[in-house]
Image 1 (cartoon, rainbow, N blue to C red):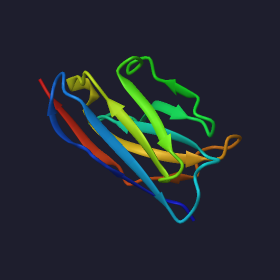
Image 2: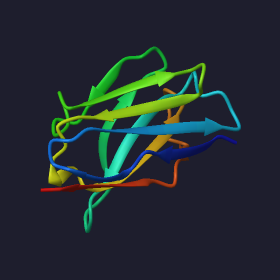
Image 3: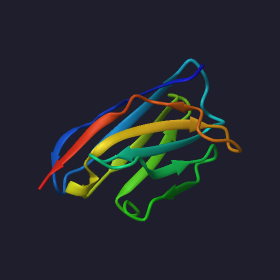
Image 4: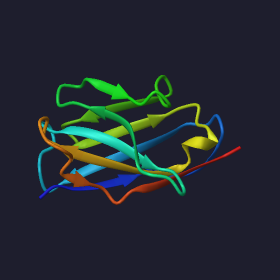
Length: 117
């Protein structure tokens, strides 16, 4: 049973940077695709980006060029580097893990990111 724990959220100003970490425990995530999602206030959860087991990444258009996902299999951790933050990036951010051919099986509890204007 893999457990995911996000950290690094907080309150920042527009234009600032923030890095979120997603630490996995209880299992090796090196073969998993790792996704980041977010849920803005009063809205549905939405896709932010994903990194495959071999490091390929895909991003939502709204964050392309500003957000970067990386992973350290040695540390069993996935990172979401967020630059040039905007107020509309305010949301609870979640990481998720899933095998390549299936839906995401494991989810973290989320971490709040608030961007003030």
